[in-house]
Image 1 (cartoon, one colour):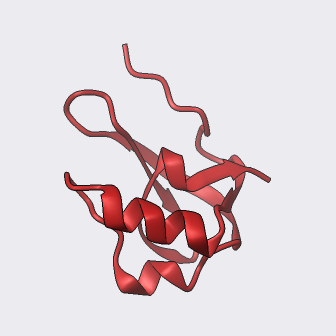
Image 2: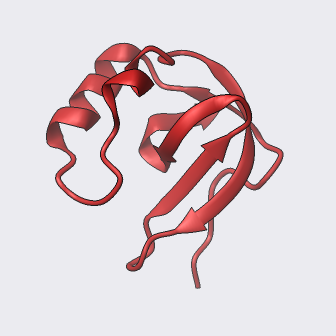
Length: 77
């Protein structure tokens, strides 16, 4: 069964800009990061909702921060 690391309501921090740029450069599958998302490096947010891509990749949506976020782009705040 699928299990997220950051349940709805969790306080998270988006990783730093260098890590986001590396993820953007290397990730070749679904929901790539947009250029707009890079400006949110280091931002704090609250998990608004969680979804799972076929195969188990966990995707997050954050309150007041646009975009779909991959688990590798977030840490606990």
